[in-house]
Image 1: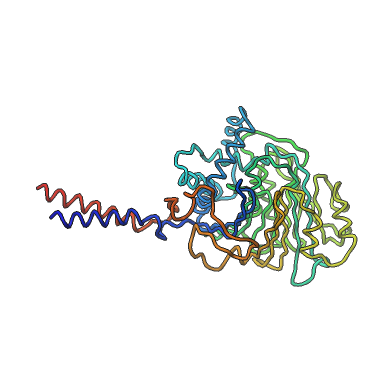
Image 2: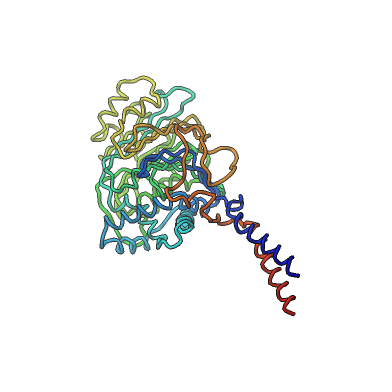
Length: 442
């Protein structure tokens, strides 16, 4: 009787040693491109798919060390105020549906790599809303369509985030492609590790959404929505496939929430359906500024940090006004180059149609660019997970996190919603061993 039991133990050991490397343990992310220096400054292009929790889990596991380091920087910067900021986060509203699951996934993903790290959902929310409580900035954005573009191009939109470098983690520029499996819209976010809120984002329809500071003031009343969360909501919460409906939908949503920090929200929907919302602190956003026919034929939107009714250029936007005043067909190259590379990041999109676009991005500290196609970020099939591969995004691939435990083979973490078959086999073998031992004892 002893030999069969020993064989079962040997098989169980083999399964225990080999299990984490099996596909059942794969995570719902893929590093498409990574260019980082020894300080982890640079670029990562990542694709995330699955449920909102699974996508968040992938984000947390892929960037566990970066998120922990960034949180430490935030705590050091805020000092004794950090507990008060956490308390405010407990009273805020998070939209759209699914974003809270993404945050829970990030927490669990980080802990899958660093199980003893005392991080929770409120910590992730504080990091994501840094733009609400510490964001005096001077951004510049512009969008054009109609006579200013040439087929097959329908719209060009660009946003420059003019801001300092608040934390070292902000120099790790992450272009994240989110592919939810619940039917909600695919989207791309340019931010730092661990972000689910939106500073600059693009959805499958080609809409570029961003926020600009305006009249810097913050309300801390209960039930408010962070402005970067409101920006995320109008980017990804919509349901109608018709871009002609998007402005009215966004207006209805923003009129029914109270935004914590005063702001402009750019909703650059393609082909003239875009607008700019003005949101006072503690209240709903007002009626949007829309393209005006007496300003470049209603084929241009320009946003700075100054107010305008749309019939003239806002203060600080003369260089963009002059660009259009010169006339002619604009290109992605000229649209991008107009803004220079002085900001924390710069994002441009050339929209040819739904899920047919080219995205260029630059982050501070780099001399190279991310240049990619929508089809590269969202291939037709999701094959593999937690891996790195070259995909034509303009650079070589690399590992996900400085900590070697964040690689697929050694992180030892399981994506929620996937039940690996191997652990059940381990359990069955263990029960069988226990039964045979009892038989021997009897």
